[in-house]
Amino acid sequence: MTAPIPPAACPLPDAAPPEIPRPVLSCAQLRRVGIDTGDEHVIYLHEDSPICRAEGFGAHSRVQISIDERRLLARLNMVSGGWLAPEEAGLSEPAWSALAPRLGETAMFAHPSSVESLSRVRAKIHGQPLNNEDFQAIMQDVAQRRYSALELAAFVTACANGHLTPREISSLTGAMVATGARLDWSRAIVADKHCIGGLPGNRTTPIVVAIATSLGLVMPKTSSRAITSPAGTADTMEMLAPVDLSLPRMREIVERTGGCLIWGGSIGLSPADDVMIRIERALDIDSEGQLVASVLSKKIAAGSSHVLIDMPVGPTAKIRDMIEARSLAACLQQVARDFGMHMRCVFTDGSQPIGRGVGPALEAHDVLAVLQGRPGAPLDLRERAIALASALLELTGAAAGEVLATRMATEALDRGAAWRQFQAICEAQGGMRTPGRAAQQYPVRSALGGRVHAIDNRQLSRTAKLAGAPMSPLAGLELHVRVGDRVEPGQPIFTVHAQTRGELAYAMEYVRRHPCIVTLAEAP
Image 1 (cartoon, rainbow, N blue to C red):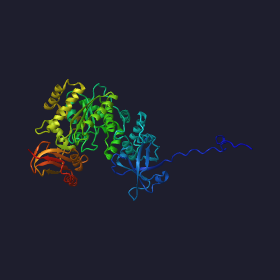
Image 2: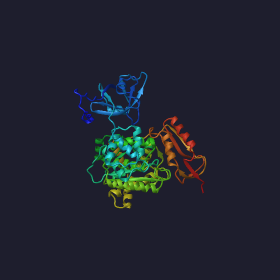
Image 3: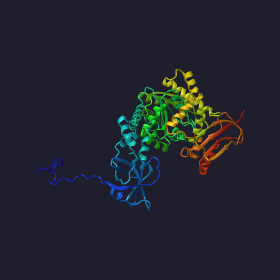
């Protein structure tokens, strides 16, 4: 009996095998539908679209859209009715801006290739450590927006709550840097300053930049917009000058004035971080490892050599106590050393807000008052800006010792050099603006008398956000008291500012439900 032929030795049929089918590319004309989807790229197709039938797309599918070499990944929303024809494909505003289709161009639609780096995310979810290569692969896919919001949330959560080792934090930081531009200023000393946040009104950065650059330091400051606060430095600065500038414009401004104050998202520094911030904001997650990677990736990419970190510490600040502050500072220092960066962390009082204004325009008014030396300018904002500027002068070697550094920073303000420098920077960025005032204002008065015992930073910030800040830039609140001040019954303790009556009512409803935003103790 003849033995059967083993499967591996079975002869092929005479006919040539059919070719592996290639993906079908469907095409359609694009239409700008005028829907703002925030940072997310969204495509709209009619439920009767032939593209959906040909490709098997359904609601929330990930779709690759391409025009020649330009490609975009978007989430699909299915629509009905007559506002979008079956042969059309609608793009949200962010998707339209990213793809930039020209008149007459036809877009091709296909399923995107699989995201291989997701296997590394799953490994992290199961507790496995990741290496440089793992983080590089993940961050490249994140920067190219190949991750869905759900997949991003899985990665952010897997890395939160102390689940990143110091080595992993350095690897994540380097991977974030590698996703975007990296600046080189051909200088030994490039100064920078960052605040960890969590303290309403703490808008010292524009003042510090003005002081430092008036004294000869080079400080190309890139700042973020608000993540969970009523205003970021870029939001406040935008009340005073354009901040959405290109990299060539940034270089030109720094060469002319020695510094700038622009939005970092406009020049492509660590774009993967910008994508993840959107998810961290939605989840309200800002863990130590991710915070360090986020902050330092931007500083490294910006070409900073000497960085001062302002770390407010207080019971209702982002950093609650000195144990947490020292742990974060040690992590920042370790990663900074890994990348050859000089860093100093300064622990500051985070027990109450700084300045009077909370919200982009109101904080801009405070900044101008300090720089212009107006009578009644917020003394706490002035003093903190001087202290931070002097610490930066020491760190960079521009001043020998705290006494000299403090004197130099104070004189730069008092003699008007910082104000002149700030005006020069604003003019170079496109012209100085005057911040406005909100139409709707409502003073919140104290029902009792006594001395101010505490101010809740978080509830104060929440009130400003409910009033519309930072999306409504004139909105926020103006604080009239500080801890230790004597308050009489009926005296205003803060005023809520809003651009519409509806937003004002929304914020005031929160104030009524939280009567202890400002708490009093019996006066002696």
